[in-house]
Image 1 (cartoon, helix red, strand yellow):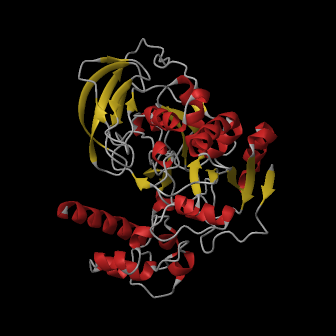
Image 2 (cartoon, rainbow, N blue to C red):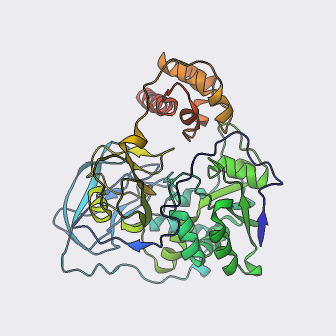
Image 3 (spheres, rainbow, N blue to C red):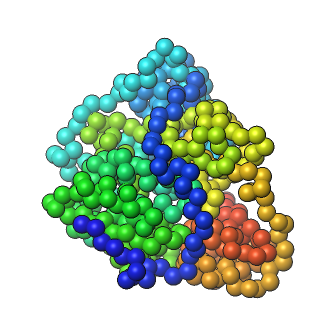
Length: 447
């Protein structure tokens, strides 16, 4: 059933309407990128404990074979993205810049790269606990960018329950169209994954939230939804950051997640459409996550589009295939609002990377930061009603404890709205990221 929410429900307050720039790739069907000669598989591609390698240098591996095991409940295993031989286990840079132990695999040139690992399993006969364990074994994490282990969301904290599953098909970040194309091309996989999640959580209700600029995706899903599925497709206002968990819960359910709280505190659980599609495809085959769809776009790209890419592919391999225009410079993993600038072209595609954006020098250049003029634009933009202006001032004088205790820094999910609207060009969200990292390091040192 299709429900139009835009117009009669306010949704969340504040937020932005930045230029979408989705026309470059929204109509481009997904195509497979050729396999690279070498893949770099970081053992930490997710929130939680890094995986533990179970292969050694010189060992042969086949595509889909486990190469690292989860190191606890908040952790997931890794699988070989290509058939080949393990060259070494060494530190390599990740999208966030840290050096992380990684399994480096050299592909066999003669291999056809068919998936040679896995066996059918009857997921209909599984109990909720068995489903949770099986989802963990797939290595699936949130593919919208957060990379939080999906199976952890299937086990709410003690005393909490989930009555509504929200499927996030908003993809509000400018430029990116991977979720859009996935919903258009693979709606059945999304529903299969949703059925697994619903059984594991024993949730009464399921809603798929899609922004109004993705009517084609909403129609594609509605065509395959049966009455017995008890799934509702709801079209919401095109607005940034509509796809953030707290914002989407507010828009669809009119429930507010408390400060420092989780969606389960208000009876909800939110999953990205790509995450569910992978579960729907991988779980029945008992296979692991080894590839994902990414959008490669920006006016610096010769062949913008949506590509199915082997995890661990170095960015250099991707850009060589799509082509770079002369005179272009800045490369970003993700979108312009929440993405991270890449320092090395050897950085690999990881589970949380949803796109590669290449901006021209004219697009990416900005004026130098100036003193704050107390205009209040950042307060009006912040979707969770923080005070970015004052938080920025506290960050500059390193008042980290006050930022957390009095001004709720840790509730910031780094959407970038404050930085986008600041007329003084103050890099507020970057200041908050650094502050949070320092706070985490201080806590770790004190424990």
